[in-house]
Length: 124
Image (cartoon, rainbow, N blue to C red; front, top):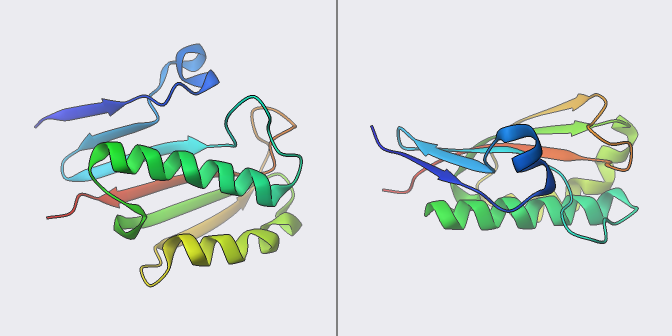
């Protein structure tokens, strides 16, 4: 089986020792993804948009898209913030909604308000 590892240059990838995504066995496994870049938005909506953009880019590098996502897990320190993300999530996944789970938990840095992890199938 061929394994392809995709790095996005995220600050924690080298510090922790992981890849943004791994393609293996016809699946794309995208690591938990927070907002990226120099200017992390303060609001959960902005952080959600940033995380989704990074996930979309990783999927595209793998040869897949958001339409190929079959599983998503949302991690939020404050579960009350989740509802504010729903419009973006509906738009991102459109007519192809994945199975989803939301967990309330601490994240690696208190500035982060949401982390998103997805699994996608490679298109045939």
